[in-house]
Image (tube, rainbow, N blue to C red; front, top):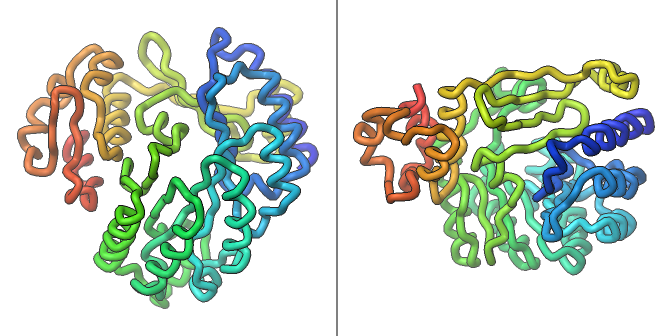
Length: 346
């Protein structure tokens, strides 16, 4: 960790000093993964960020944590450096399911972490998964009910995705279990209903909040905002005044990343053409409950949605709703959003 964080601090300082004309920063997001395991470096990390960038007075400063790494010492550090939003990767409160998917924490650790976090931070959210092997309605509802007993204002509800290189994917390929997509949808519906009863509104396919506590960082990405990625494998997206836009990705090679201190190139850039940018804007914006902004589409691209994608709305109008300002997927069609978006952009 030591050489990694020394390099990261150097990158933050170097990039921050010349950050695009001194632009103010709306959000700081430390994640994904488990930054909480790096507790000894977090204070210096945030000090370096604060010294290198101009943060807005109401900036959202968010950190991801896993339950097994939440300690009173970590909480004190995060609070002292100004963190105001914490996301906890709970996934389930069934020890059997947590063990099945290879999580490092158990039910007791998740509940203890929430009991420590919720009295301290103004915004605390949790991640919950549906479609886990062996999961049933009782498991899901029990998990949600116990979580909602805490002062939470955000819940992310994701379906299980089998990633390359994981034990679960190997088991699926060996036929030891399969994902029942229809049942996963039923579980998602069950979660959505329970969250609605508790006052949570869905604002994105997988995200729910109460009292307006949207995740501003993620929402900015879905609305095609700029973001700056710092660290190993991090990605940046920068919109220039003219096309092409730029996406920049830091190397995922640890040894190569450490050469940043010698000012060696450790990232690669991808140019995004006008039409590709329009497709990305549609793909991201239609994830949102409010949909994509037709006004912002014109501001960004100099033409209307209908000019860029002629006839698409008429073809898919039974799945879509439209106002003067937004185009959105109907709520009961979110389950087939990938197919609808593909029909528009391809």
